[in-house]
Length: 196
Image 1 (cartoon, rainbow, N blue to C red):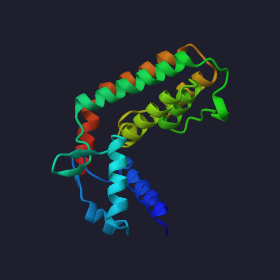
Image 2 (tube, rainbow, N blue to C red):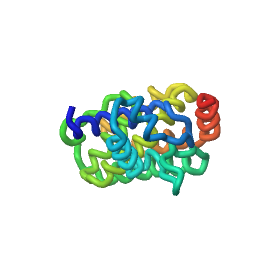
Image 3 (cartoon, rainbow, N blue to C red):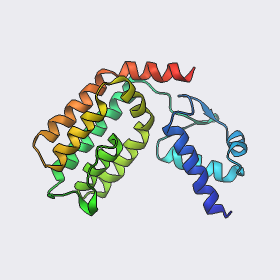
Image 4 (cartoon, rainbow, N blue to C red):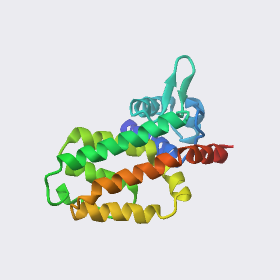
């Protein structure tokens, strides 16, 4: 296996583990232990950890290495609000009757929905920022879907409104984020309960 393949495998594995909540919030990520678990040398592990830090999926702490971000109410509220701003901006910039490049929205999950809305803006920067927010919200969205009733139907409703270019899309996106902001304490509590 060549170094490039190993580096991508390690990166994908670590990113996937973060998305599923395999590491507790605030946990220290030990490169030596990860190298053993992922059958890799330390260099691809450190490269992947630095890449994930650059994507703000993990944190680096002076003289204390790499850590899973510690989740708190202020940070999660900020991230939800940022996601809403990005979606509403993408809608405002969207002038197409159909999402570009065949990005037809299927109500699979929130990440697909917001990626499609971002793609409709024609802005590479918005697409990149939404991808970042999606990655940072991946595990939180799994938790929220277990707390909120009808989350899948809500995403489907937004997807339908977006596909039809309905003026209600903005309002539905606002309601989506308002519902999540209302349960931020419950989301954080659930995540910390699972981490114990």
